[in-house]
Image (cartoon, rainbow, N blue to C red; front, side, top):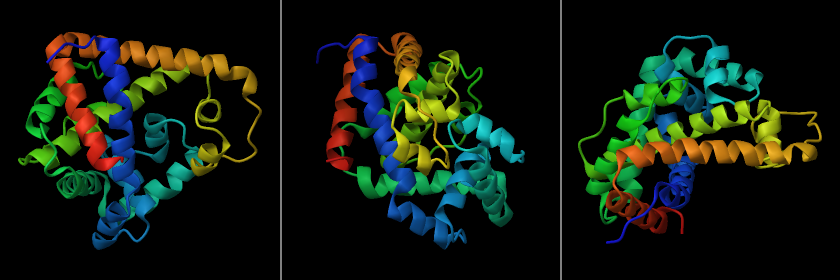
Length: 247
């Protein structure tokens, strides 16, 4: 097996981690598991489950940690979700749902044990300063089985990349709605609860700057966490996961 640079593994693996994590979050099976736990509104499960690692906090704290969402949407969904199961308990249930989704969709993927080991090295090497949501998920327990553990670590690394990007968009001078509009557009902004959307076409260079900051911060951790050979291994199994889940 060859070697990859830190920048190469960012390009190869980070998009897979993002997309697989997103698929778990929005998948009908995840929504069905939410309903089984008493969360009739799957999005209330999402907000309370994902944000529950922050503890019993006000919704504004969750909105600050998530970034990009309209705070009014966060408050409505957070308050509904924690009223059902509480913050920490809903996070525990969300973590279990993540592992269960991994068993359903990653079982049989070549290299999952090794991927989980390397993913854990990356998560452990990352500095949690200013990244509370990532730090919260990194501290959660992991499943014993390879598919469940690998999926939970995909979620952890997705939170890491997302938190880094929130740092990047803030550093580039983008507000939450501007960050969405200059990246994924009006449809995604509406999904995140924004209305009366401003024209942000003149701010595209700021999004490019934010992406560059995010990639650089991510690459710094891959550089110190993994050798060149390990980075190639990590990217190879990420490709296997992509083939199993995203194609």
